[in-house]
Length: 181
Image (cartoon, rainbow, N blue to C red; front, side, top):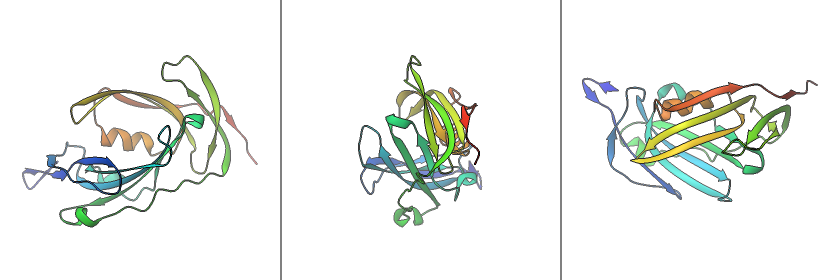
């Protein structure tokens, strides 16, 4: 996005750990602020923490954690803080937390090739069943993404805003079971 005729630039870096430094890169038209993010990964990388600085959409500032629950495949919880200028050097998001109280909803989760699907129980404010699929090109590294699970309703908006790649899609899936108390 252009601010006063000049494209916004943010430091871009990502590392497993507590801090990173990188070069400033121009932001896309969909990204109008900078952010620092901490992601708690409980996937195959048991207990890892990733730290990221990047361009971001201000619409997504202060929206709470980005939670991806893929059942037995694990969870990813990301907390982001929007910042600008030198404030990004010292800004630190809160440690990501996830409410694990089951909420009565179930969604389908599948292997990446789509051959095997099974229901998983959703927790906390994971009220939507979503599917993300497509290709993203992050730092000249092309990766194919396909995943399903229980997610917060802001996940699609957040992911598409972060990676506004025309080949990345996010769709709402049907809740396969909802137990109302």
